[in-house]
Length: 216
Ligand code: PRP
Picture 1: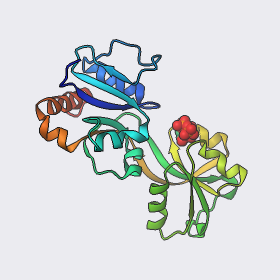
Picture 2: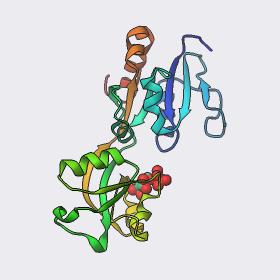
Picture 3: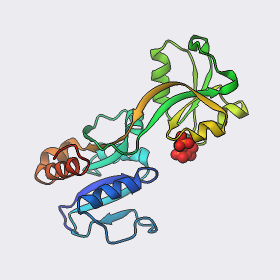
């Protein structure tokens, strides 16, 4: 592999296929089947790019500390991580929303009655900031998944979670009570890489802009 290869952190999970499709449209391919391989590093066929396959929550750290020159990550993960990274492109794919939801049976139109509620979430920072901005005192309960379960077993009265189709909320008898943010995939870039490796990084950013239709 080219020793000057650009390192890109791509997230496992819901954004992975869209990421690899994007690189495919840019004419960048990998020789191995990334879906079945247990490897975590994949060079592009031409050796110009090295892909690191990591947990989505870890992408900001790889990019911030320069282990990757750039990365792709959902806005939700980026805001939750609170890392100061360059975000040159909104890639447009991976659209979903972060919402507040509660049991349909408990739905109250007036959210001022939410004081001291327990809120289960994968996004403790986003949730704490949201409720603080509204002057609501809640106890945030950080979980790692299956958030929609929490209200039905008495762990929390409300949740803050991602909604895509809305099917998971529906199947767990929850309804949205507010929307916190819209989420899409972002390209994030290490500040030093952009300066020191600009001759490789800038054309790659431009090619990505073209592939997602930001630039003609
Ligand atoms: C995400 C999210 C919701 C679900 C929403 O969970 O946290 O649970 O998808 O999708 P929907 O609106 O299309 O039903 P994920 O599948 O990532 O699993 P997790 O619960 O383990 O986090």
